[in-house]
Every structure is written in structure tokens, then in C-alpha cells.
View 1: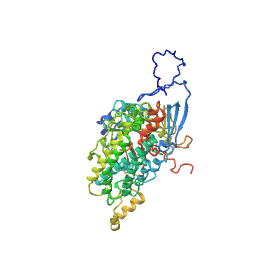
View 2: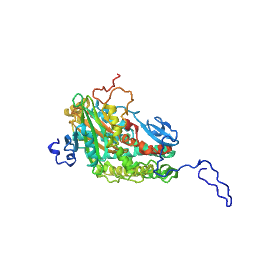
View 3: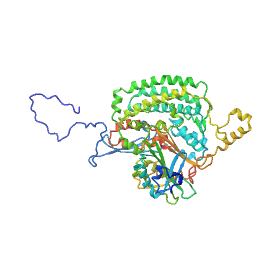
View 4: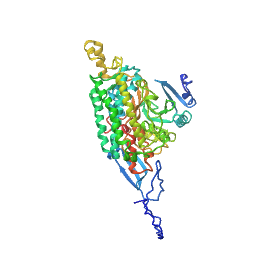
Length: 153
Length: 428
């Protein structure tokens, strides 16, 4: 359900039926969808609305709140000079979401980074390995329950 | 010699020798052509390039599967410079975080300062005075020159043109002196702060910037004289490193690489920040989409940046270098000694920082390498809840396999150089 003030927004309206909520703050549009419909939302953004570029994918850890993780996608429509932020919330128990790779190939490394630093698994990702840290590194540093000094000290 | 035939002697009727189809002729690939590989036809080898290879500019490791000199498969391996800067933002106050941004991309510190401050200022709703905005533009453009000069010098050295490096670093030294004059630091400037600038303008800056900008265009001519018409340079760069525009957009490439493929994309024009809309400049583009086109785009960008610096120098407005926001910017030294309120603000800002309203913003600017973005989430405290850095090098480097697979190993160096990545920016 989109809030009242976003009803007239043409970009937000495209997500009318799948949006959980949406905001327009600081001139930036955010649409939140359920994790199960993230591929549908990304597909619509790319094919219907012409957001041809995925700028970045990242996570936010809301520990100890539940649902704990947010996966955030920043999209850009180059010719229309428009930006869109898509978001999905995942539980801390089993953070899993479909990979955006089938829609935007640039999601590849960004999802690997988010997996590496947050421990969020992207299903059907072609090569979900750690990218920044060594393969045998324990834990996921950008989680809020991971100490800044690291766990070994 | 391959391909050179003996002149035929008229009348000679020697029978042709059947050599079983073995020839010495080397297959020459045309521009943008890639050699197809038949699996199982030949034995391949894996070459480990880097992480200490000089042409990888830092510590990039490339795993290349080769068939002779042709690359069948390339797998970049990054992370050697990962320093956990995004984690560290979360334990620093907003103003302290500025110093971390310098260290992400050490060739473009002021661009990074700027994008971070723009994000925080958006959350705070600060209005930045014109003098600070124009100074930011001027320094961001000098940063672009600085970064492009390092790129040109090292890129040319990679391909074999040694002397260009020395010419480029001569001018870069001047730019670093200007940075030192403004901020006291040559590289880790942290001069742009949330709410304006760290310090007022130094005495005599106009002369130094003017002297530099007067001579700089003729110096760009010098680089062009060394390279643009140079047959070895064009031979090594033209038709090399091609990657289609669709692939680049899909893989998240930004900046000069897209402009060299004919797409007029520049955040300074598309989404002006820091009063870029008041400056008169052009966005250079090329259509050839190869290493040479990227070189031409960056050379043209240097000329445009010099134009912007000159406009900023000549039209620099007067006024304060910091916003009028008592709880956020440090008070004037003199006022601190005479006014109780200023002293309290100073104490509070230094000891505990300032609170930033809850919310999330994404600010993006055109850095020398492309779109650098800062996604900042605030929970209403003095420290950012989360800062995500969208480094342009990370996005650009992702396109490496697409660009070099199927081409010759000698072209990898030229192709990588044309991407202009900084590993600190990639790994963060």
C-alpha cells in the first residue's frame, strides 16, 4: 500500500499493487516491496519505467529490530534524470532474497559485497562468493553485532 | 616473415609442396573482432597477473586463462585493499567521517569530501554560502585535473611512452601545491567540511591558481603533441578495449567510459550540485568507444575543467566560507574568546558532535572516474547509522572480463589503463 501523498507519482504508481510502503523524502523516492516480489519490481523498473542502470546494491542492519535487514537498490533512469530507491526487508533468522542478476548484470559484484559484509544470501546468483574478505573469514563485518575491532581481539 | 611472398618468376612451373595445411600466416583480427575458442581444441594455460603487477595500479589480481596470447576467460580478484571504511564511518561523528573519505580514493580526495558533505547537508537541510560553493567547484575541478594527470602519465607509461609521465607530474605538483595552500595537506585534504569549508581562503591563492591556469592549456597541448599523432600510441590504442554501450550500462559503468561511447552523461549537467549550473562548460563525447576515444575524452575534459577553474577564479563571490548554523559549524575564533554561547557551541561540537535528523539520502556527483555516490542513513544521533560508498572504480572494474575476453594479452594493459580505476576506491 502506497501512502496517500504518493498516489499521483507516476513512478510510484507502477508499483501500486506490490508496494508495501513508500516515501518521498529529501526529493528521493523510496518504494518498499516484499522480498518475494523484488524481481517483479526490478523488472518493472527496468522494462516499463526505463531505469536502465542499477547504481548500487547494499544492505542496512537494523539489529536488534525485526525484520533485521534492509536490502537497498539504487536505480537510475539516465535520460529522464530520475532516481529510484527500492527496498526489501529480510528477517535476521534466514536472510535470503532473489538475486537481481537476471535483470541487471551489474548486481553481480554488489550482491557479492552485500553477501560478504552482511551475510545476506542472494538466491540464483551465478557466483556467490566473498569478494572483499578472504574466503575463510569468520562473520560478516557490517553487521551491527560485529565489533569494530574485529572478533579476534 | 609471415605473409611475405616471394615474387613469382615467370615461366617457372615448380610443383606446389603439400605441407599438410600448416602455414606460417598469423591471423590478424580487425577492430572489435574477437577470436572464437573451440573447447578442447587446444591446451590452455592460466596466468596470474598481479596483485603486484605495476600496470594494475595498486593491487588488482587478474586470473587469465590463455590460449596462446588470446584471453579466453578473465576473473578479476579484488579486496586486497579492503580497510572496512564503511564500518568505521559508524563509529565516527559526522564531521570526523570527512577524513575517511579522503582515504577511499586517494587521487580524488576533494570529490569524495564533497559527496559526503552533500549527503550530510541534505539531511541537515543546510544552505551553503556561495563563496563556499564556488570554492568547492574550483577545487573539485582541480581534483579532476590532478586525477586525470596521474591517469595520463601512468597509462602512457604502461603502454611504453615514458616521458609523458614526467610532463604530467610537473603540472600535478602545481595542483598539489594549491591544495596544500588551501588545506595544509597535499593529498589528504579534508578541506570541504559539513557546513562549508574548513578554513577561509589563504592569502595570495588567486595568484597561484591564476599562474597555473594561465599555463595549463598550453601544457595540455604538449601532452597531445606527444601522444595524439604518435603512431605507436594510436597503434596501441585505436580499436582496442571495445565494449558495447549496452554492456557498459548493464554492468554499471559510469563516467568517461560512457562518454567515449557517445552517451552524453555527466552528473554536473544532469543533476547539478554545488552551483555547477552557473558555470559554462561542455561535456565532451566520442563515439569510437576504444582506448583512444577514452583518452580523447579525458584530454577534452581537462580543457573544460580548466575553463571552469578560470570562471570560478574570476567570479568568486564574497562572503562567509561556512553556513550560518551555530550548532554545526565551529564558531569564529574571536567570538569564542568573547561570547559565552560560542564557547559552549565549540565545546559541544568538539566533544560530542552534532545530531543529524533521522532519514536516508543518496547523493551522487561526477568524480574524475564517474559516478561516486554516498548513501547515508541517519538514526538521529551524532554518528551515521550506515554509510555506503558507491565507488566508480568498483562499477567500472566489473566490466573488465567483458572487455578483455577474446582479445590479446598485450591489449589488457591498454584496456585496464583506459578504465582509470583506483583500487582504494574499489575495495574501500
